[in-house]
Length: 546
Image (cartoon, rainbow, N blue to C red):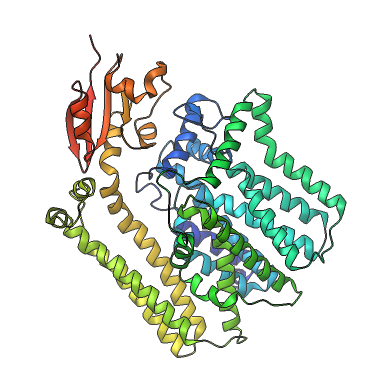
C-alpha cells in the first residue's frame, strides 16, 4: 500500500485511471467536420502519398498548419489503421501526459496535495476533458506553450541555462504544431510579466542567445526543410494565412465580443467558479506567487488577444484552460488548507451553473424523443434543420442517468460544503463532473452526430473505392476526402464545381447538396439527377456525356 502513496505509485494510478476515461470509445463517433476530419485527412494523405514533409488536403499543399500533430496521427494510423480511433488517440495520450505533468508541477510548486488537486480540477472541468477525446490539434499546442511559459518562469526564479533551453524547446514545438501564434502568446505573456515586475529580473545574455538558437532550430525546422525542398511558396502562403486569420473574420466563425468569456466561464466549469477569487495581486516573491501571477497574466493575455481577433472559434481560447484550472486549484487548495474562508457565493454559483446544465442536458432526451414532432410543428423554420431532425436516432431513456449523475454531484457537494467537510465536497464535485462529462460524450454525442452529419458521412463511405467524382456543392466540408477515401485526381478540373455541374466530365460525378439549396441547382443544371435524400442532405449524380 505504501507504494501507491509514493510519487511513482500515484503517477501510475493517474495514468491508468486517465487511460480508462480517455481511451475507450474514441472510435465510437465519426470524426466531426471541419477540424477533426481536416487533420485526420492530412495524416491519411501523408500515408497514401508517402509525402511526410508537406501537409496536404485533397493532395494539394495545405498551408494552414505545420505538421507535428499530423505526424502524431500518422504514427497512430500506422498502428491502429486509418480510422477515428487512430485520429483521436494522440490526444488521449496527451491527456495522460498532461495530468502527469500537472501532478509533478503542482507537487514541485506546492506539494503532493496541490498536484493531485490540480489533476482533479483539470480533468473534472468540461472542455479540458472533451479535448482529450477529440482529434483537434489544440491540446498539444497548448501543452507546449504552457511548458514553455513554466520553464521561463523557472529560469526567472533560478537562472539556469537548462530552463531557458527547455522553454525554447517547447515553444519551438508549439510553432511546429500550429505556427508562430505559439511564440506570439508566449512573447506577449512574458513581456507583460516583465513589465509588471518592472524588469527587475536576472537574465543572462548568453542564455538569450541560446534561447534564440534553440527556438529557431526547433520551431523553424520544418519551415527550413520546405525552403530547401523548393517549397518557399508554401511558407509565404502560410504567413499570409496567419495574418488573414488575425485580421479578418473566418468563414462561418464570427461571434460577439465577449464570446470567449462565456465559453470559458461555462466550458471550464467547475474550475472557472473558484478561479474568480484568484485574480487579486500578491507581492510575494516566492515561486508559488510568481506562478500565480504568471498564470493570471497568461490567462488575460490569451483571452484579450482572441477577443480582439475577429474569428471566434471555441478552441482559440483553449490555452486559458491551464491557467484557469491552476487558479481554480489554487483557491481550492487555500480553502482546504484553511487559509481562505469558504464563501456562500461560490456554493450558489456552482448550484446555479450546475442547474443550467441539468436543464440543458435533461432536455436532450425529451427533444430527441419528440424531434420529428417538433420539426413538423413549424417551430423551426430552417428547412435543413427540419430535415435533420427527421433522422432515426434512438433515445432509450437511459440517457437520463446523466442528469441523475449531475444532480447527485451537486447535491453531495452542497451537503459536504455545508458540513464544512470541504475535501469531500470537492472530491464529489470534480469526480462527479468527470463521470458526467464521460457519460455525455458516450451517450449524447453519438446521437447529436446522428442528426448533424451521419447521413452524409455514411453516403461518402458507401462510395469509398469507386472511381467517381464526389463533391459537396454549396457548403464547405472535408468529409468527402476522408470517408470516400479520395485518391489523387488525374484531371486538373476535378476540383472545379462548375466543371462538375456542367462540364464535359470523364466519369460519373456524385454531388451532395443541402436540402434548402438543391432546387436552384436542379433547375439550373438539367443534367443533374436526384438520387436520394436523407436528413437534410440531397444526393445527386451526373453521368459523363457519351
